[in-house]
Amino acid sequence: MRALILASAAAIAVSATAHADLNVGDAAPELVLEGYQAGEAVNFTLSEALESGPVVAFFFPAAFTSGCEAQAANFAENIEQFETLGAQVIGLTAGNVDRLSDFSTQHCADAFPVFAVNDQMISDYDARMRPGGNWTGRITYVIDQDSTIAYHYADGNPYPHVDNSLEALRAMGGAD
Image (cartoon, rainbow, N blue to C red):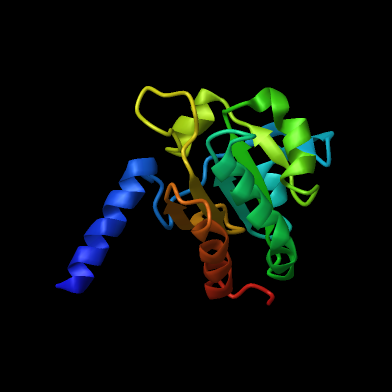
C-alpha cells in the first residue's frame, strides 16, 4: 500500500511540472540552438553533438530565478561526472533569455552552454510549464547516441535532476 501511495505522489509531482509525452525509446526531436557558454555566443545541433556521446538536456523555467540558479549550479558542480560518462550537458529555457549570457557565467560557472528555445521546441519536448504558458517546465532528458530518449524526469524540485541523470547514464553503460 505504501508503495502505491508513493507512486501516486510521484506521478502527481511529475504531472505538476510537465507531462513527458516523449517516452524512453522515442526519437528525440532535432534541436538547432543558439545560446551562450562562458558568456560567449555558441551554436548547438543535437545530431552533431550525439556523434560524441549522449546529451543531457535539462529544461528550466527561467534564468535568474532561485530554483533555476540552484539547478544550473548543481549541474555545473557535477560536470566532471557527466564528462567522465561521455555526456554533454545543455540547459534550455524560454524564460529571461535576454540574460542567458550572464547566466552562463554566473550560475552555469562556464561549465556548459545554455540555450533559448522557441515555442515549437517546447512543444516537441513537451516542456511547457503549464498549458498555454510560454515558459519551460523543469524536465530533464537523457538522449542516447542513437537519438532516442534514454531517460526523462519531470519535477519542480531542481535538485534530483542531476543525480537521476547520472544514474541513467551509468545504467546506459557510460564510461565511468
